[in-house]
Length: 402
Image (cartoon, rainbow, N blue to C red):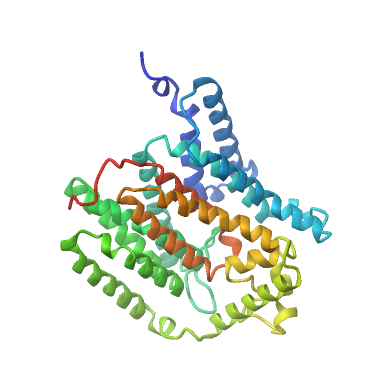
């Protein structure tokens, strides 16, 4: 008899819908087709993955509940509920239910436990291949839209893709955070061809990360890789240090004016937004001022008449502080608990890959210190992705093979 997994068509298995969801969430290609947007395609994929997972758990019994699932599920439910609680506390009468960012937040939190259960048992190789294919696709989209269509911000000519999450600082996370995983595959690949392919992907993602001209994005990548130096095979350690130095110099000279001036108007405005967040938190420390409201108080708190050449007030450019301002200490504590859950999963991973996953977390966390909560979807996605990869206690390959 064939195993149960082989007898069920792939279209009826949860990984199929989760792979599609991951691909479209990152690349946003589904938004190019308006009929997919009208039918809420991403939500349909999440529902399909939930239904097929429930059927599998109750009938086919191919999946088991991995360690930590109940904790992750509880944290996700709390993260869904905290904005509602804050809305009620601030007399917003649950108008948050009509907020598109909150709806997107709920979709990601619904998908997170399913991703953790299914992808942790559906095969690491398949999961990694989907990640790499998705990132390569996004890089090609970035190159085409930036260098061919010239989609840029008017006031500094940095890339600004006309897609969701097309902000250059958001893109720097998408390109930068997965780099340690790609590096792991370069060192652990068993054939020259695979090393060349992974090396090409690494250079493609690194080049795109630098091209976004995100200063914290580049700094985060450098710090993340510095944490890995001691784990690089001995005879490659000196080479790795030279590569890091080369990346730093390339990033600096790619746009010397931007990378040499950290006291420019852009960073001053970020600091004003952080002051706004801290002021709001001091006024309502427990439940905050409500989801997606901090920017409304930007001019009131700072007294600043306008934001550069843009016409909208600035969000708090620090995710932890924006959480404190909008959801208060309780919402902040739940969000940080999800981050701590990921740290716990990675620290529990005893294989060499655990060190590379920790570098991913370092890059991710440093970026959050200069970015608003608008990055929430793919931040949660990366946290769950890293936690899922940490479930593989016995990797099939070893980083000492070079």
